[in-house]
Image 1 (tube, rainbow over the protein chains, first blue to last red):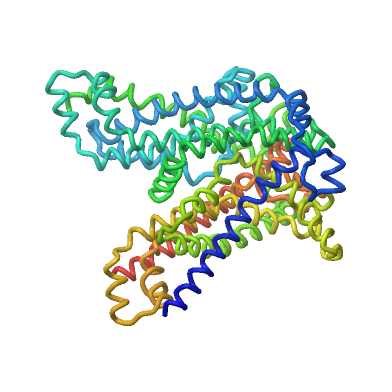
Image 2: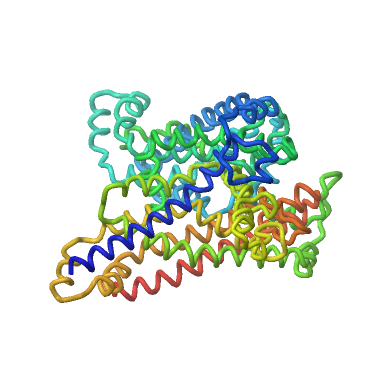
Length: 279
Length: 294
């Protein structure tokens, strides 16, 4: 019995080891390649780099303004996050707490927003571009911020309404009796209550804003406003045959993402799971 | 909460979200459908041409290649991700030394920008400088080298594999949450009754996990329709649209060839397909769930 159990454990560990290795190898491979010269990459791919040579990284930073791209992405992410959170919170609060003469209004609003989840965003890229042009926003950062903020609202409403519905409103009623106005109540009473779901929504949104490519590729034409994903999409053109430079640039971009992941891992994993299971 | 429900308050609370959602989501959907009935090419006015774009679509060889590739990817990712993520979740169910590391590691690709995922795999799949063919060459199996990407057949399979790599940890985590929600005493009762491990999985775990499996399948299918960046980076649809999927073909006809009207017809069809898939699946599963419970 014991022997059999051991054998099973060994087999299961082996399977997990193989899967973990397959996951890790592409990333490790990338790091190894990033220290090698182009000729080595093509002719001698498995030799370990002879010494830690940062030349690739220097070239990578010379070819594309990577730090500027980080800055641009950060600006977009911060503003889109603020807009998305404020709008999502207000409408979720209205749907769950305010009194409407017709009960259909809050339910209809909820369904309308949540149905946005089933629609692949690609279908709206071109019309969004037309609308941005019509509004005279093309070339401004808001041309990207507003559509991205909107795309995240569907999931935000789903999660926040779900959370608020399960949470009793007595505390808020007490606060009103004590003379709170709606602004004070939202910031001082409700905000602390919704912290857990807020964390989930923030993480979802930040990852989305940080990684978004298709919409940005159409709405951002100005290289001064290029985001990280846009820059990465141009690697093949910019570095043309300079594979090692391209690899080094990829590593430079991935490292902050992985650091973010390591720090917020618990919230990311839990948040994404909660979102998916409810969605 | 009647005190707060003044008309002005309600309007202030609702309007910002509704306006943004209408301008950047609802209106665009209708505009897409509208343009799919025109011959708009970016210059001049859009002329209404009825169903002509859709007629062209039905005879478009490249559209059907893209459709076929999309289906290969959808089937490929569904039949691999569902069982694999389930097995990995089972193996990780009982924590052991290092199980946390395994879980974090396989989840990690999920946070990497999809556009970079494509780039990372370029250095593995590329026929000339990629790792796989380099390994085959170095161990004397040069004859087994394949055009993993950019050839005539293999690209969609490679794209499906890359997607598996990207999302396995995510679905594993959802499955682990599902496993945790099954009460332990059911297993204990079954064990007392003499059920072995595989019987317990088949008769208890899988039926109890039905909802999770349903959610996963829907997410995998709708996710599969959204695979874009990987194809864009690996082959950009080439050679000659052989490796396009629906969304990359739509993107290419719209933004590269400036055939906006036609591109929007492709977009509309993709959108409808995606919707039909989700609905068929939901309805069927809804029925079988009701039968189970009733």
